[in-house]
Length: 132
Image (tube, rainbow, N blue to C red; front, side):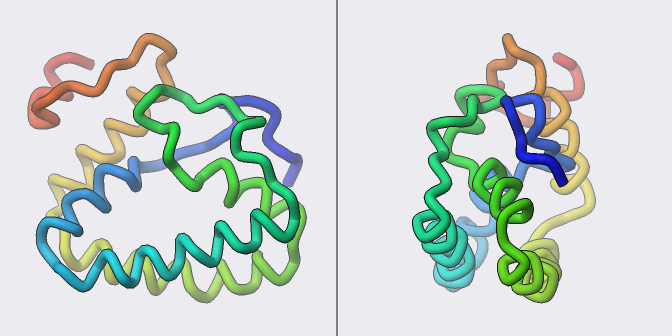
């Protein structure tokens, strides 16, 4: 995997930020699980000197996403790849168990829309499919 060079190189299949916000509202314990995984990404990033500011985000909404760091870490660290290969599916199962199929589909649409340079996240995500 080549190192991402710009915002367009961060391939997002769904908007994790949106899904995490929903999960935080539904399960008080989810934040602890997610922050545990996110802390691991941040520690690996610090050790391997990944500078998230070196990568442009796809939209202002994407600025806090860990996707850029994860993509770089996957290129630089075999250990990170192995841990991510085991832990990420577990995290996804936990997260997805708290969500409806419609919410997952909206997050996929949101990720596609966020790739557009002029994208502005609508206040009501239910209207996203009408706007894009």
